[in-house]
Length: 132
Image (tube, rainbow, N blue to C red; front, top):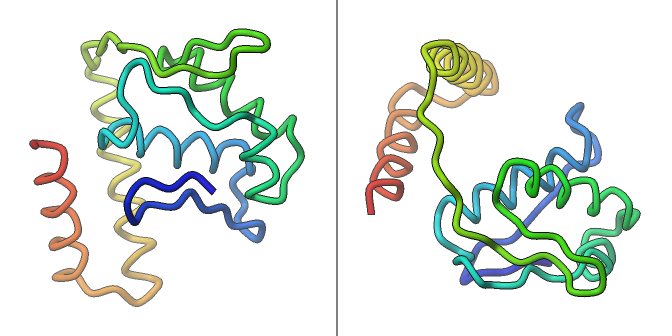
């Protein structure tokens, strides 16, 4: 698995989210939090597929998605290299979409039994990590 200190990429086969999306989301989180820097090479598609016990095309699809978003440079026989990403300016619609998704995620956390204080503490921790 992809490991950076204590961070491990995980997937949930019981989740309604497609596995490729879970992989892309997990890698994106690692990229945003600095686990990989521009110039770093990600593990091969084959290695990630073996580590996660998924088909290599699933991992390749996640890598392609991240390349489309501007995170990776994909080259045949050279693998995936993290590139310097130009950060787009968010639109009003994307801010509203984010707010809606965050409200939905928070509601799901409450429905799963987390209390508001625990959710707020986690959001504070994430905010601190992003501002480093």
